[in-house]
Amino acid sequence: MGKLRDKMREDLVLRAYSPHTQDGYLRCVQQFAKYHMRSPEEMGEKEIRDFLFHLARRKVSPFTQDQYVNAIKFLYSVTLKRPEVVKDIPHPKRPKVLPVILSQDEVLSFFEKIRSVKYKAIVATAYAAGLRISEVCALRITDVDSKRMRIHIRSGKGKRDRYVMLGESLLALLREYFKTARPKGEYLFPGRKPGTHLSTAAVSLVVGRINKKSGLSKKATMHTFRHCFATHLMEAGTDIRILQVLLGHSSIKTTLHYTHITDRLVGKLASPLDMIQPSS
Image 1 (cartoon, rainbow, N blue to C red):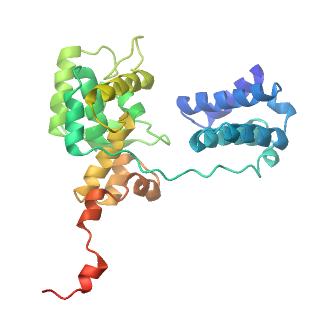
Image 2 (image 1 turned 30 degrees about the horizontal axis):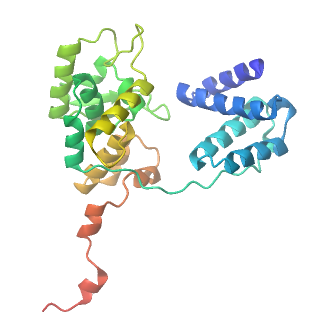
Image 3 (image 1 turned 90 degrees about the horizontal axis):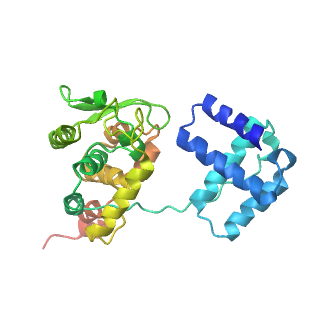
């Protein structure tokens, strides 16, 4: 499906899908074609349903199944211009799983296990500013504005720019990293090849190793620190609308999902029964 793959890639680029999403969608479609050993152009709704049933039978996670559905729907609706084929293809029901949240002490404990000032700066940036891993990796040196104490996030999810706060502690750590590493080029965290930034895969691998050495019972990833940013600010009384802007969410519903009701907030709530009991 060489020509079809190229056409789909063009359609994804023209619609400003991120490189990560482009690669993911193309992998999904390739697996779909490989399963049936036929070009998607020769297939229809029955083959799509058979493939999705195959994924469900293999107990592929609902999140991964949903990505396959999105990719196949894009292929038939946009690239092949056959939207009628996928109009009745359902999305799997995704379970509502609460994200892993570290306490502030656990975050501090994690930081203490990071020996590299570079990776300490990377993880700290995700936690201090609530950034996605891709946003941290893509930061340019000029994005860090120490005079106005803010960080410029360029083309975040949905191709939206935004500003987030730059705290004194993070600024001091970034200065320490910059003085030690002297990064060359435009990126704050450059990759091995000139003109590129550090890959998200490389960061995830290192953070996974640190998590194993941390002794924490919870599995912490880079996205965990974004969750912690939102939750800890919510617990401190930050307005949900402000969090929405800082996290770069287009919908307040997404922010409510990230900033779930925390144990600390639940502990502060008064039971209705206690409210009506006469004081002794």
